[in-house]
Every structure is written in C-alpha cells, then in structure tokens.
Image (cartoon, rainbow, N blue to C red; front, top):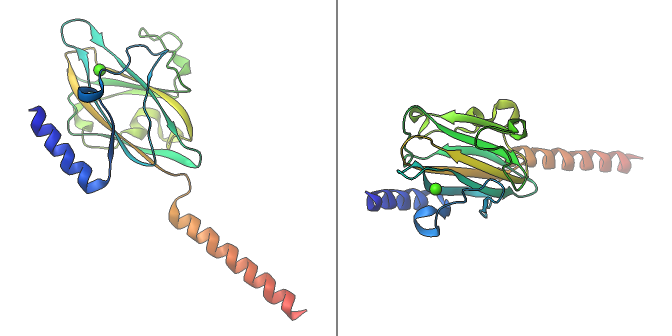
Length: 194
Ligand SMILES: [Ca+2]
C-alpha cells in the first residue's frame, strides 16, 4: 500500500513541481509538543507534508509544525491530498501566528488561533484553506505560522499541500507596471510640449 501511495505521489510531484518538505515515513514523527513544533522549511510553490496521526493504540499522536511564508508571499491554498484518511467524521486543523502553538490539547487559550476547523472525508482532494480559517483570513500573509493536526480516532494518514505564491498576482503586477510606464510616457510628452 505504501509503495502505491509513494508511486502515485511521485507522479503527482513530477507533473506539478511540488516538493515533499516533510514525510514522516522518512524524516520521523512531527513534534507532539505545540510549544516546540517541528520546523519545516517551505518555499514559494507547492509544499507537501505527509504523515500519520490519531491513536494507533498507544495514545493520540498530535502533530505540530511551524513554517514561514516568505516576505512578499502568501499561503494561497491548502490542498487536502488523496492520501488523507479520516477516522470517524472529521479531523482537526488549527493554525496560530508565530513559532509556537500555545492552545492546549483541551482547548485552553483557544483565542490564540488564527483559524481552526475540522475537515471531513468529503473535502479530500480539495483546497480547504478558506474552510479552515474563514474567507476573511485567507490567503494567509507572510510570517511564521504554527499548525496543529489532530485525529482523536484511529490512526490515519494525511497529506497537505501548502501552496505559497507571490502576494501580488502576476497579471496585476504587469498591469501596474504598464500603467506606470504609460504615466511616465504621458508626463514626458507633456514636458516635451512645453
Ligand atoms: Ca505523526
């Protein structure tokens, strides 16, 4: 099963220039401590995080990690990859600004979240960013962020694709440049007429 998932991912990666920035099967379990999340390096483009969470019979495995959206960029999309499984009805996703996730497992200090929600099996294969943080908080701006993933049911695998893009959409940037040059040209012609 693992081989099949790996092969499918390789095909997906090859066709989309995505990078697997953390794979628990290779790099080990992500931090269980929100105050000391695993630091994952992400770059503009697609950043895949693959792991397992939930209770495999010896307590709930919570996963905490932090990442940084570079200046001038945003986290534009968050795709729930097909490798994801949901035990029961839903799994939990929460994100907080900064290098730590200070909300306790029982929900203490919940106001510190930038956004949180549950995702269900019906969302697998879709961009869940707006569903997780709300339309008014997406895209997520530049800075360091910490994520908490949790499944209190049985152990499940998950795959998340963090899509980081330029904060200014390219067509808009080109349009601004064009208008700027037009402005300069107009000014020049006015000056020449004097
Ligand atoms: Ca894990």
